[in-house]
Image (cartoon, rainbow, N blue to C red; front, side):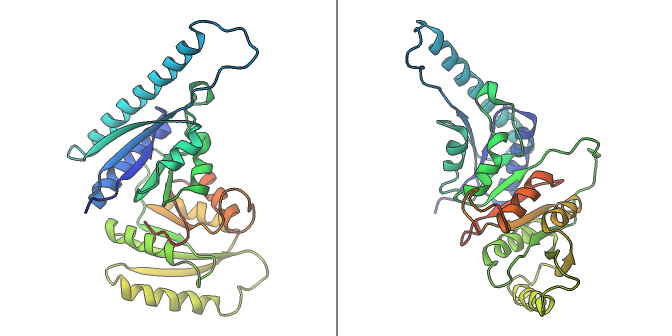
Amino acid sequence: MTTKPIVVGTDGSAPARLAVQWAAAEATLRGAPLRIVSAAEILPRMNGEPAHPTGFETVAAHLVGLRSQALAAAAKTAAAVAPDLLIDTDPVDGPPAQAVTASGSGAQLLVVGSRGAGAFAALTLGSVSRYVAGRGPCPVVVVRDRNPGEDDEAPAGHYVVVGIKNPADCSAALTFAFEEARLRNRALFAVHAWQWGPKPPGGLTAELDDLLSVWRGKYPEVDADGEVIHGQPGRTLAELSARADLVVLGRHHQGDRAMSGPAKVIHAVVGHAHGPVAVIPPGNPG
């Protein structure tokens, strides 16, 4: 049986390089090959404009050249992290958001950086990380570069955090989170954050405890604990990310149509986290 790859998008930017490094290490943990993709959106000629014999071809060649450079640099970066890793590079065409998202079909995991090189290069991976997180066909990890003023030598986290909104509908996120904790030999910390009213909803703490008891039975090697925390969910999880290897969130809405509830929390955490954030589509733990 062929092992599904880890797929990572690159545009040649520094944040994309961090994503490639993270993806290479993750592929090593999972014993999976790494597929590196880069998109070059070739714009059509504008109707009604005077045609320049070589203008379009020159721009197109430049964009394709940038894509090739990004792929070559990313392959070297990945090989430096994991010399024995099987690495494949794959140029893709079309709008970067859609092209990178589609590349996750059939993958274990799709990894992107938090921001990119800018629209001039037409390889705007970072600008589409939110799109990919909201629509990816497989689990998506957005690898954030450090915020200004953060210590580049900050120690690695000691646990995997998983956000729980509804204990009755979180199987995909919990499966991914427990698998990651097992692979990394980390503890797992499950969090439900609530912000309205002086007390959490009745029975929620007991429900979370019962849920984790079941999952500890499935993963006895993982030290798992949970807590119901009073606070805004997005802010709470972003703050916890500073001390975590990874924050895991379940995705319950497709795309950007639902800008409340889980989708709003995901966007807040992806935008403000201090480290990588995994977004897991329903029914697909990876």
